[in-house]
Amino acid sequence: MQKLVLFDIDGTLVLTGRAGLRALDLAFCDVLGVEGALEGIAFAGRTDRAILEDALRRADPSGHVDRAPLDRLRESYLAHLSRAIAEDRPDKGVLPGVRPLLEALGERPSVELALLTGNLEEGARIKLEHFNLWRYFGWGVFGGTTTDRNTLMTEALQTAHRRGVCPSSVDAVFVVGDTPYDVACAKSVGARALGVATGPYDATTLRASGADEVFDDLADTVALLKWLA
Image (cartoon, rainbow, N blue to C red; front, side):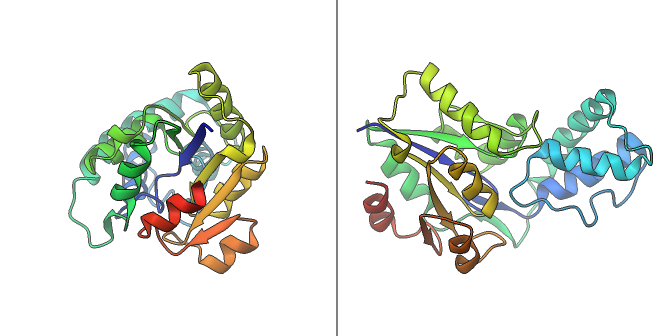
């Protein structure tokens, strides 16, 4: 039976030392001259588009979100992210078990690996190429154009179908992520959600959000493969 396994990035596959936050703060300084634009804005599990729009509304009392500032912020953010991701940080690295799990799944012809992330596509690539993980994923759906993460799930299923990946049912579609947003995204179409407590939410919170299974991390490859099977 063909399976589709969709992975989140931040807090699930890697920790970046908050490179994204630092890069976006610098982008707001460059483009709008605004410092501390991201203070108090939630990041975990949300799309980059939603984060950008929230910060822009705070910077502009009218609450109007223009396309032009968004485009300039995106370009500046990606430039800063390329530099920020290279900085040495203690809270940075590939999370436990990620490489062995991706290797094992990638060797299974019945498994299609893809990304489902709130990151901009270019941002996702910068982060994962830095850790040499981009090569495991043939495609993905990204958060550059939507503020509603759940829409990415529908897009993922449509993209999989166009690529000839046809799971027999939504029970053969899995979302692996570290936040309740990832769980909700899976459940929006009836897919299965695997919570991993390597991000800002603990195992209890992930279970309460409706995850079908929760692991403390991805280190137990055998147990994870058994569950996915």
